[in-house]
Image (cartoon, rainbow, N blue to C red; front, side):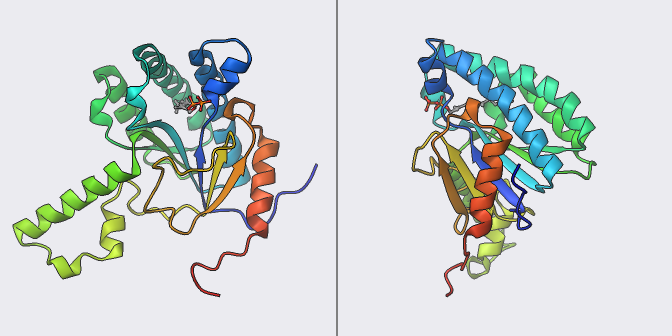
Length: 237
Ligand code: FPP
């Protein structure tokens, strides 16, 4: 087994993509792909916490995913409830802090309650911070942040010239967290899909030709090795 590199990303983002294709290849309904993807979410999250990742952000449901067939959206909502209940238990053993990024007001009352409970019960832990992006979109997040800042300008507590990059960062769902260092996209697609648009300005991307339900800890290790070998210059030389 190859060793993990010393230089790990502090904040890792994962776009959990390819559930539908995974199911199609097996002649299964798309919901079966999402169920397999949710199992894998649990496994990879625990693995990230065990190897010392400090922040993990996973993309679970985008603001655009509501346009999928009603049956698929309902299956995903059922999975979120089931897995959040299970995750409440196993993430407790790993001391994981769970946060949600996105407009959760769009979800059903029972799911919203579970989200609140999960956040409250885990808030005082000291382990890895897991951000679950649900009903999340980078553009929607920025729009929300600009509205918050515009309201403060209107009230007179902020001058337009005091709107800095730091203030914008502080108005995002990820306020107080470092920007992602590495974003992994399984399933081979080469696009950001509206994920952490502002925060990923200098993130390294690793695209892998593996569908999310097949993505194993060894694949994560390979992505981490590739990241460790990248030279990050942040626009400098
Ligand atoms: C993208 O694959 C995946 C999703 C839209 C859903 C991801 C959700 C999970 C893995 C469940 C996570 C569970 C919790 C509790 C966070 P796709 O359907 O777009 O795949 P395709 O591109 O192959 O069609």
